[in-house]
Each structure stands twice: as C-alpha cells, then as structure tokens.
Figure (cartoon, rainbow, N blue to C red):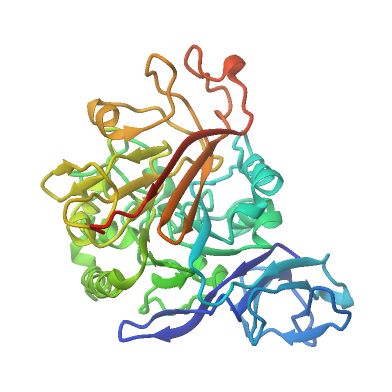
Length: 462
C-alpha cells in the first residue's frame, strides 16, 4: 500500500459553476490511499473507530479512480462522525493485510478560530532537496499547531514519467509527506509542475529556464498545461471530466478560503486562441461571486500557485497574467497566499491594482486598509535570492545585518482567534551547496528557526 492521506474534497458538483463540493470537516473526511494491482475480488476499505472505543467500523471505498499504470487510488469518505472527536483508522491492502494505525480529529461546530499550515514548492527530485526535512520538522515541533493543510502548488517535481512510472514524482511527494498527510486534511491548489508540459512547448526540455517558447517569443518558456490537470484530479478526488472546474472554495472555522487555479489565466493568457471554452472568464466570474459572498466572513483568504505580485524582479514573466486579479481581490480578502518564486516574501499592506499600488499602514479589507500578500518559502526545493528596490521597500524577507539576502526553505502557520491574526514562518536554511551570506546562520546551519512573525487585531474599519 502506498501513502495514506486525508482530504475534504468531493467529486460532486456544487453551485451554478459546478465546482467541487467540500465536505463538512466536523462530520466528514476522506481517506485516500494507493495500492498496486489487486485481483478482481479485492475490496478497498477503511476500518475506523472513535478513539477510546474497541469496536471497529468498516467503510468500503465509495469511489475508486480509474487505473493509473500498475495501481489504483481509492477514496473512502467517512460520514456521520462526531464533531471535535478523535478517530483512529487503518486501511486494507491485498491478502487481508492492514496498514499501521493512524488518527485524525474532526472540527468543532461553530468555531470562532482557525489554524492552518501552508506549504508549497516541494518538488523533491530525490537529490539534494529537503522536503523530507520539512515534514520531519513539522511533525516533531509543530504538529499540534494547526488543524488542516493548504498547499500552494508544485507538489510533484514534474507531472511526467520517470523510471517507467507515469506518476513517479507524485508518489515521491506523497511518500515523503505521509507522516503529515495521514493525520491532517490537505486542501491543495495546483501549480505549473503539477501538470504535464505544454503541448505548445512540445517537450519538457523546452520548459527549461530562459528558453524562449518556440511558438510564442513574447515570453520565456513556462512549463505548464492548463488543459490537463488529470493527475491532480485523480489524487485529490476531483471529477476527471476536464470540462468541469478543479478550483473550489470552503469555510473552516471563522475563515473562508478560495483555492484558485492560477494556471488557467497564465496558460490561456499565453495562448488565448486555445481558450475556446472561455475558461478564464468562467473562473473569473466564479471568483467575483465567491469574493462577494465571503464579505460576510470574519476572515477571507485566496490561495494559488503563481503570485499576483512579485517584488524580486527575477523575470517571472508569468506573474503579469495574475496581476489583473489584484483589482478583483482588493478590499475583499485579508490575504493572498502563493508560492512559485522560491523566495519568502511577506509584503507590507498594499492597496494593489493592475496599474500600481499604495502602501497602507494596516492589514485588512476596509477602505483605508491593505491586503496582505504572502509568498511562502519553498518546502524543500532550491530557494532563490533575487532582489531589487521593490523587494527592499515592500517586503519582509530573510537577511543578515547588512540586508544581504539569505536562502531559506520552510513553511508558514497562521492562527486566527476571533479577531486576532498570528503568522509564524519557519525556515530551515539552504539546500545543496548554497552558502548563506556572512553572519547569517552561523556556520550555514540548517536547523529549524523562526524567520518571521506577525500579530494584529482586526481594525474597527474592517
């Protein structure tokens, strides 16, 4: 049996836009696991029980995805669970074998708080990347600090074959993250590396940095294909029909969340002639509706892979296709959360538009407040140290006493307690032979350290 991981996504459509329906975290959860070829009589199932009881209950897989090479992914949704309770579970493998025992906790009803972990850009290549180090640090030191997980994309190194296995890099991601994902539900968004190479780029070699796209010389090559999110859909129990959305929204505790697919505006921005089904407009119209609905939420977040603003100036040309969304979210979300840049950035409060920005004194959604823009550090992949004047004037980032940029992989935890916001970002240093600037992390150590923190209470204007 391959990795166990928990999720709250359902393949059932909801609303006029037919986005995936999210389960109730207080009474439901989906257990997912992958297993190699079974005989025709094999029945995927989970055994579960309330912690402290002896009797196991059994739930047979409600949905089994289509076969992927030599294995299948099974999704088992548990319902009618008790809120705010611990449950233990095991899953069945071939020949009657059972997995080790795991557990999860359901959410409370009418929570006035929310706590979540944010990770992105794992992309473990089985070389010097440190995704496993990140998982170990979280499970050892911060496992009880959050209730669910947000990923901002680029989970797999690439959505391509390796060593004769079509989904090899997805399995690396889940294998190394199992001690985390088997206990806490994951709410993903898709990144460019979570899709196969663009049909227009012809091959993954054409996606290499600084290579010009061979059919669109206005932009450097960008390894993505918004026309094919089939692998992402298979692993996260989203309807495989590509004509239906893979983006969604949900509420957890006192916060509302939107998981956006940033590859849609980027891919079809580069190749507008391919957007025959008006997918860019479809997602944008859905976003407008959800953003307006979330005005009534105590806290509102949108997360996506490619950021709306990047202050490093590192020639990430694809950001230009996300920038117009600043006009859409300003004064409507508290924070926009993303990754992709491989460099931690927490921007000062901004009233951002496609045309420019105004720095504000406080974070929030009020007329005189600014949206928070957070670019999380890579959770294992190579960090970068690009810089420019905007980075220094608008952004909190790891640096030494002289302001020289530092390499940091890491993760962020956000806690919301009624009207109180707390952010903690932890770093674990560099990757491979990357050397820190003089005086930063003496001896270039790679231990877990707090590199940024922020706390504030919502303004009365908000």
